[in-house]
Image (cartoon, rainbow, N blue to C red; front, side):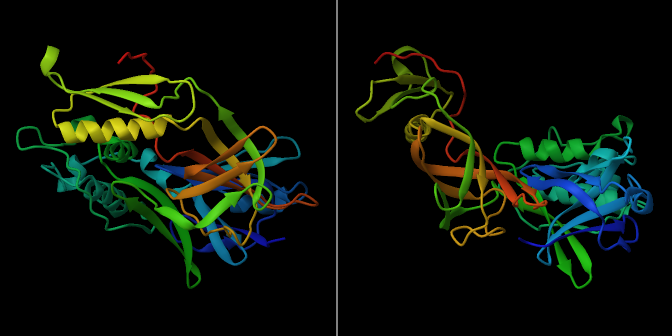
Length: 367
């Protein structure tokens, strides 16, 4: 079984407060466009001697696996409950949600015209960490995106009178069309953890041809695999801009040996080539009958722990009693549960389809 260690550090100085906290029931992991979380309990009987190292809002906690850091964040809650002492923490991305723009426009960094949302995210972190006692030593990738926000007529501005929440500004950037995605990582740099916000534009991750998850090899349990034909269609009718006979109208269809099912995709697309591309993409997305949201996996040479990252697309092969499925799914987070007693380590991937329908509403269409 892999060795784990739980380390506490002072949020302002980074000084290590405890190299081996006695934690049990640990669950932790990162997520896409969010800070991830950690839940754990101080080992009963030792809480009275170690609780002093867990000062909520002022203590950092790290999870080390086999000598490598796999998670880090800020302790936000620690409350004794009888003989137990549960703690809750969230990744460093949770910190901007506890901070505000007190100067307006991030102290002169805005207003923004045709600005890259990646730069605004970097400016938010720079502003937060420039303020007294606000430096968590977080670095942000220098990624650039093709998305923009703000115009000469309507700049993206953060008025001082509105006192904007910094975390909400980051959320707005990630919600833009073709805006960036983010997650976070921690690694050792010498004897100090390095905190990093990873930016991807327009998305994080890549298709992983080198790893896979297969029943009987490295899949432990299929938690949520649903076969649902409510959104299935092998024929997509896509409508674009225009009216009456001048309206763009595209049909993308294949015969796959199944009962014909159709979906109507209404858009305001003006380009004939683009609407054909959207119709095909929608049809491919709707031909997936199996929806898989969670998967328990084992640390295995087919996909060693740490070989995947949040945002990666991975191949799933399910060959079980009621499901025979092969397809690509995207890792949007994972949860790690260290071994405890006779219980083995548990790794749960949070997944979504690599190709998703543009909307969840189904409308019958007739050709």
